[in-house]
Image (cartoon, rainbow, N blue to C red):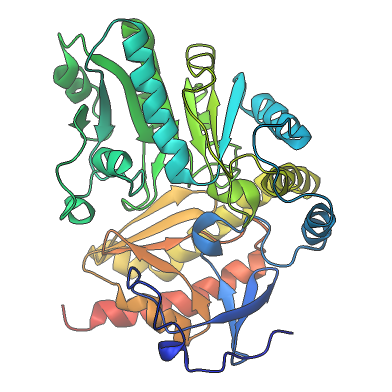
Length: 407
């Protein structure tokens, strides 16, 4: 077992840039849905590294596969063929119904590649200044281009001038989308998260998804759906947009695809799959043998253990239990809404609730708060009903206590 850090957590990393408002916890190891800090305290993990640790922690089959791969090859570069790239690409094509895949290392990179695909799509059609429709409250990353596509002025502040070429519209309003783009020959794509994660667990309505798909077909635009946080089985289907029975032209993936190993992917359909040619895009670490093995094994284990069905079953149980425990607060409006699907759940409160992150950690539960007032639950897809009940038992009294306090 790892030894405890030699310094207190607050003093352990004086040379790391101050880019995160960290909880004063240093984690040492984990098993299943539980993790332990360097002082031996146990926590129930309802965050999964922000939707990353699909298989939880220390999954025996996954760990064995990674150990095997580390003993073979970790990195070779894309000068050479990587057999597991072909295997993982074939599985993603099979699961999505699309045709080709580009591998990178993060969700930001996947979204950046999607934006480049959209611009290339436009330029190939003779559009000199392509424009992409994006959404209010969206979050696509923190590079200059993905930050420009993001719909959060707070995270954009201090980094202007932002990249041009984006048209912003509200969620779930096809009339607004039509109005914002009417008569504009430069529009080439519509880009959104099927369920916004950082924006507060805001879901695109099923009818709206189908309407946007039809509009993209009508106007020869690319439909690009960011599944970085809501994909890979989190909602009970492989990809959240599949609940609407549609298929995008471009789909960025990351997070849960590698169960903790850094990985990103852009899956493309026929309209976009051949846009990139050698020299148009690339990556040093993307598609490396270790990440590809992690992706192949993640999908294999998810299928073997029925984790999509588990996400649906446990997610429904968790949401129903939260609804019962917070019934009075929902009735009064102090809890505005329970949002999400499967094991992607948001509890929207009527006032900011960032303090709940630390309070839950003190009680042995890891969560996050996003959009200032939305408790976000993104547990490993292996979570059990009994563990979901533990989440409810710890979280709901703290929410009630917080709501009863000063505004």
